[in-house]
Length: 326
Image 1 (cartoon, rainbow, N blue to C red):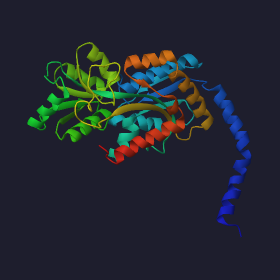
Image 2 (cartoon, rainbow, N blue to C red; image 1 turned 45 degrees about the vertical axis):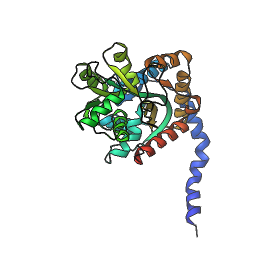
Image 3 (cartoon, one colour; image 1 turned 60 degrees about the horizontal axis):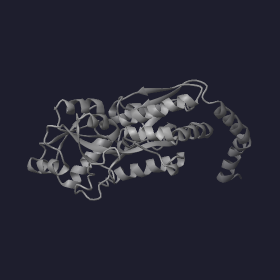
Image 4 (cartoon, rainbow, N blue to C red; image 1 turned 90 degrees about the vertical axis):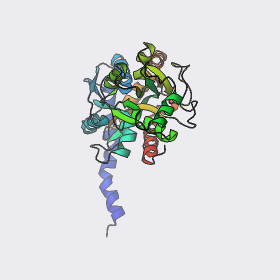
């Protein structure tokens, strides 16, 4: 009688015998990769941090590879539409997705009917960046510091409106966490991306907005938006005069945005290793690092560059929001 364990072993044997040949074939494919253009799906409109740094990585990989990397913005559903397209793509390395703290961490915790599974549908390749968010105000809104914002929200609960890139995004959740920690109530005005939200803030149609530093920095530097507070543990070098939320009195507060490059789950490991090696080489290049800092981001650290660590960071982020650890 053949036991179930033995049966499973016998079933695996042909695959095991073929493994060396299969691995050699995968290595050969990886060595020739890419043989046609590669597509990066960014699940948000142009101008958001995932788009800014995804395009930077795509441009630099286009210089290293014999084929171009083309960025496709596919927005909607707080990034869900683009993530679904990435998950359903052929697992051959030619369609990659720029996932974010929102699409891979927040969405699975808040949206029970997502058309993708953040854990099962993707293989992590590498982190791309981390960055703080920044609370900005219209220059004439009279909200030039966080204490003033919170005092006004306490005086008139729900009367202070704030914009974000959309419901369930990192910007939205960071602002809700701020309101929760401060014990105030503000009204969320969601937009389909940072660009439209920032346009309305500049026009004076909404007084406040939580945005990524990368998206907001050009408007702050031009004087069209006022930096109220940043969300990291320390002040970013781009805004050394702006207090962090923690410095302004909300002790222990920290909210960071990040993006990582992912592929469909069944992508061959050899292809993942090839893309990881080239992407990490780009992201560690001193000129690219300098450009990322100039744009408002913090480049990956060496210890965060592997696909395994990128996947672990993604899981920790998801666990945080599933536990509602505000």
